[in-house]
Length: 328
Image: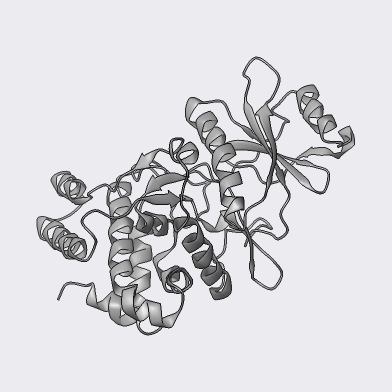
């Protein structure tokens, strides 16, 4: 996962075809795709170039850079495992390297049905409650899987970052008053009391943002895309990619329904809030990214999304739990 002090990537649009056409056609011919059916996709990710090969295949090629190359090689390891667990993600057909000096790795995937919310040029929208609950169930399936050593050894370990030193730094630089810094530090200490001291580590997707979800016309989840941020981590860290106001629906699906929510929901709220704050505090000093459209792109977005979550009415029992997490 991207560390909280780093800007999170937005979408890109490359005007010119970035890779050698001949090398791309070699891959296409290997899988029975005609040259005229190879085209650059309209939506381009920050980590890789995306090509459509006919109507049924998608080619993802890593952009140059050691980290991006490593992320795509990690996807080649994680995607087949996720598919075997029954997670809704496109099947990997092949992987390899694009011919040429850079030897950039690629993945060839089945093309999934559905579209991203806001895919027609607008800001990425929020998935509805149905899709959020379905996403929660997919994450529970993933987090509960027994990961074999061959996959586990290829995952980076992502440990929680304590945001409290960052609060002191913000106060020292004049971004916060000392009294507000003390209040925020006390809130985090209270949240920490409800989290397990040593949470069980699991395989997480690492980037369950709306632009990595495909939905059908009825608003149901059809696919979870882009495994480049997959990691071995506290499962609660997964929910730092969900706007806090959507957590009730996602956690309801994740925990398995109202009865499980009543038993374990409060603890998960505290754990998720901790991770949101651990990302929001250092991001407050970051630089804006006018191009990026995802919900947490700008420096103040995460803190304001938390304010929005508390200001808007949430369903029971979530509203009570959120209120209980505020200091008197």
